[in-house]
Length: 377
Figure 1 (cartoon, rainbow, N blue to C red):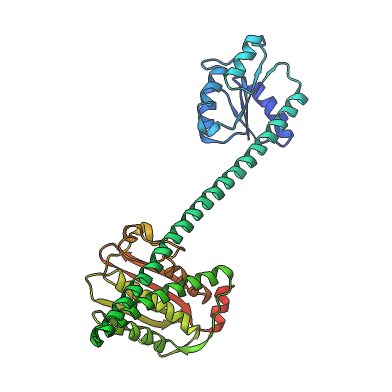
Figure 2 (tube, rainbow, N blue to C red; figure 1 turned 90 degrees about the horizontal axis):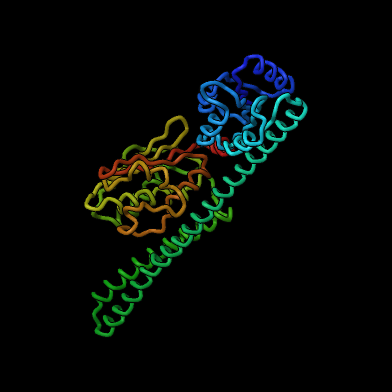
């Protein structure tokens, strides 16, 4: 849009009609003060500014506009019938004008200049868009590189910890066998097995994320009993965490369609995290129900919780809650894998949490093949 500023109505009307006849969108102001108010409210590609005006001349208006960040890309053309001397033309350029035209005006020349300014404005706009996209891409690549380096560091540490423990327990096991202390040997063997299981879980997660990234994560979709799947997950984790009471609320005898092993993997991850991030507590609730051909499953703990700001990032790849990254081990990929599994089932995954009161992780998936396919489209 073009803003014409002139204190003489006849000049405004005549120039406005000419520009509108050439398909330009035009706005007008009859004083410098009115022009400044309009510049603050609207975006203009070009301002055609009369020099000789009462109260506030064109130079003062241009100098003021040049201080507006909103108008930093707006071009200014001065028009003057009186101030045609070189010193005034020079002052016009120093005041922020890109051109200074004296009257009488050759309308064809003015139109060519206006079209040129429009073309320059459009080119600058596109260049700015490209520059912003490039900056966003650079920022994304810096963050991605940082996350990758951080992940490699974390993964190296997490993998090394159980390996070091296994090595230590094997050495202790050897000494116990040399002393023929079978009880102690059995104890060391059990602890080494626990560490090997942790190592196996880490490797499985790494393999899963690799499959997700390459699009090779396979799903064995078939009908199965949802209740059996949930019960199996609870039974396994209850045995390995006897100090915790894992309560199941609700019953889901119906058959559902999906990958039983992958969905059980999600339930196990939810319960494992509920136990892990709730030190000092001993209760985890697993709620299930089926309604309107959708399975709802939620795992609630009464632990440390997650802040509102971090909840929307919790399913991102490699994300670890900063406050707890040094207190709890993990690669920051378990929940990301869970979200990918639920997405492949055409479902939704989420969390409700209050710091220091606990968290409830949940997912909702269709129970029929038709609904899964419909939600994946």
